[in-house]
Amino acid sequence: MGPRRRTTAARPSRRGGRLLLAAPLALIAAVTTVDVLAPPEVHLGPFLIAAPAVTASFAGARTTACVGALAVLAQSVVALVRTSLTDLNHTFQIIALVLISVIATFFAHLRERDENRVVRLRSIAQAAQSVVLRPLPDRAGPLHIASVYLAAEEEAQMGGDLYAAARTASGTRLLIGDARGKGLDAISEASLVLGAFRVTARREEELPELVGHLEAGVGSAEEAGGAARAGPGAGEGAEPAEEAFVTALVLDVPDGEPVVRLVNCGHPPPILLRAGRVIPLETAGASPPLGLADLVSPEVTVETFPFGVGDVLLLYTDGVVEARDRSRAFYPLRQRLAAWSGDDPPALLEHLRADLEAYAGGHLGDDVALVAVERLAPKP
Image (cartoon, rainbow, N blue to C red; front, side):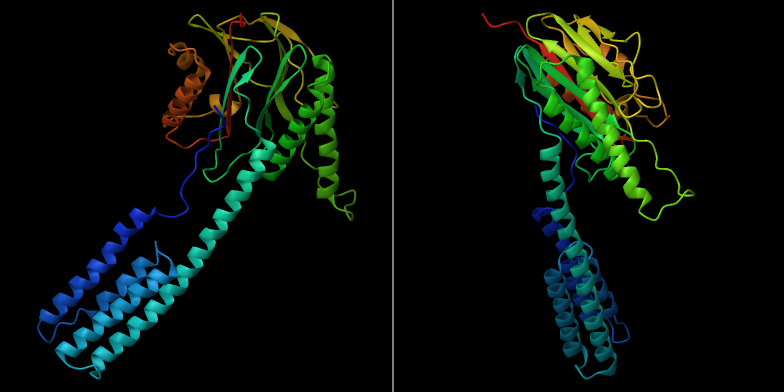
């Protein structure tokens, strides 16, 4: 199960556009019919202006121009039936209708151009997302893995949340994290951590050494970013750059042992689902977030927990537990998991995704990343 994210269409569907187009066409037909049959002192022609104006709100420039031309033609027919085209009243109505149609067509062109630009930018974002946040493998040795990514911004493809997996000679290593802040800075920090993990996770190093490499990546990015933001002319009075850091969980799941070893760098603890029980894997001592080793004691603590066949390990970012409902109450993740009766990782994440979005009313306050890992029985 690959990463899923909410997306919206840039414009109405073709069928929806046809249904919307029926409204201005019906308006032209109705106004023309009534205007022809109305008494001489009644003039409904100005109502035709609404047809191209409404069309410009959902259709392109060509369709808007066609509707405008049809409205002008209808007004001309009314003028010929009731008086003549040279009648002063109808002449001014036709001129006004032509001007409004031209203006509406121009604004429809601008809106269509902006929509096409958004579509191009979204395609670029999708390409970047596929490079930076690669889908996790469905299987990694004895592990069954599923993942979900939900961006807080509806049009965004990814933010500062991250996850990755890498196979080693003896097992699987997993990473989930959350870069501080939002926007390009958070995405940049996330990409650097992911790059460092992909380069070093396959080496036969212990978890503290791996965390050290990730820490160095965030630290170098912070120095480069601070220098870039300060600029060459920055003096002593320049405002210091904000500290960059990434909360993370780094896990090592050996193939031949029913355990999971993890380092918690200031991240929400993973949750183990075992035979209907919900067990948070709280560590005795959490290491500092990546990027803060210079400010906090850099000691890295590795802890080991049982992780046997049939167990499911849920990794998540704080966007899950910080989601709120209308009463501003936080999402009760552990209680929701306790009510879950299945054990399949893709089904679990699909359930959590739907439940979380329903709980938050479809408006998440922060990006959400979810990874579920199940240990399967070894093949005979």
